[in-house]
Length: 238
Length: 297
Image (cartoon, rainbow over all chains, first blue to last red):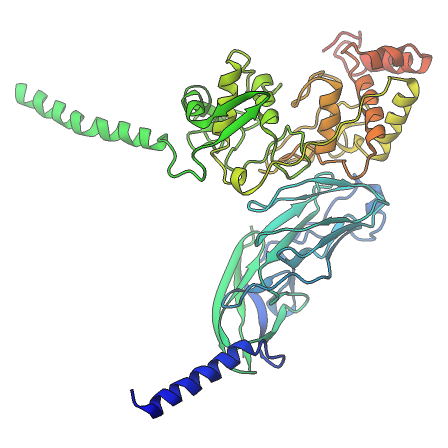
C-alpha cells in the first residue's frame, strides 16, 4: 500500500476509535412509538375482594383485573419495550426499583428493573401479603410481609421476565422484567414509549406483554435522530 | 399359505422394533447433563452419582422421570406431582427461602418420604444407597454447580413448654395471619385455602393440623420450627424468617401442637390441663364430625 492510503487508513481508524471511546452522546438518538392492538381483547372481570374486608372497603366500585389494559385509540398498557440486542450491558443504578402492595393490588402492575438493581417491596396495607415471584432462571423465594414491617430488599442477577403473585390474595398478579441495560420503558395510558440516549448502532427492540407475547423490530440509529417504531399486538377475547 | 405367513412375519419384524424403539426413545436416558459427576456428603458418608444412577433408574424414574423433571410415566396419576429435579426448587430444607437444600436435607427427604403424597419412605435402602441417590439428584440441575447451597438456619435451643409460650404462640398465629390459609383452628379451611395454587399453578391444600400429626418435612418440633422459618419453596407457604424472632418462633411451635388435638403431646397435655384449654379441645373434638359424637373422622 502506498504512503497516502496508509495515512488515510490510520486517520480513519483513529477517528472511529475516538468515536467508540468517546462514550454515549447525551444528545444521542431516540426510538419512540406507540403500542396498540388489533382484534378483540378479553374483557377484564371485576375482582371480588370480599375475603379481605380491609382492602375491599377501600374501593367504591370493584377493581378490574389487569391482565389486559387497553385505552383510547386501541392503545395497550403494561407493555415492556426494551433493547434486546445491540446495546452493551449497563451496571445497575444505585436507586431501588420500588414495588408497592396497596389496596391488595400491585403498583405498578409491571415493574421493569435492571440486573442486580435493588428491588424494594413495601406493604402499605392493613393485611399481610406474601411476595412470591415465580422466575424460572433466577431464584424462586417466597416471603411473608405483615403490615408495619420494613420493606423487603432483594435483587435478581439474571435477565428474565416473570410473574409475581400473592398466595393469600389470589387476584394479585404482577410482573417483574429484569433487563440487562438501561434502555427500557413500560407503556402507560395511551400506549406510548420513548427510549432516548441511544448511541449510533443497530438495535433490536422487543415489546413484551403478559403472559409471554413478544414482538421485535430492528432499528438503526446513525446520529441524534428520532426513529418511530410501533408495535401492534394481536389480542384474542379468551 | 406359507408365503403369506412369511410376509406377515416380515412386516411384524419391521414394524414392532420401530414401535418399541419409539417407546424406549421416549424414556431414553437424558442427553448431555450439566454436571454428570457429583458427590454428596451426609455425616461421614460420601455418595457418588455413578452409583446413584443405577438406583435412580431402578427405584425413582417411574415417577421422577428419565430426565429428572418429575415427568415419569406415573406422574400423570399423582397429586402432588413428583419433584422436578431440573428446576431444583425443594420443599424441605434447612436453608433460607430461594436457596438450595443441603445434602442432609435431601437425604432426610428420601429417608422419610413425604406423608400424604406418593413419595414413600426409603428406609429400606442402605445409608450409602441414599447418599448415592442424593449425589445423582444433583446432576440434574446446573444450579448445584453455579450456586452454593444456602447456609443452614440457626435453630436456638427449644425453651420449656409453658402456658405463656402457648398463649404467645396463639397471638402470633393471629398476628401473622396464618389463619388466612390454615384456618382459625388450623383445619386448613381459612378464607384463602380454596384458591391456593403452587408454583406450577396446580391446586394445593394448606396443612391441616386437625387431621395430621406428621408434616411433609418431618414430625418433630425442630422440623416444625424449620418449616415456617425456611418456607416451603414451590408452594404458597412463605418464609417468616424476617418477621418473627427466633425465641418467638418456639412459642408458635408450642401453640401449633395444641391444634393437633388428636396427637398426644406435652403442649396439648398442658393446654388441656387448663379449664379454657380443656373446653376448647373438647369442643373441637366434637365439631364437624359426622355423628357429632366426638369420634375421630
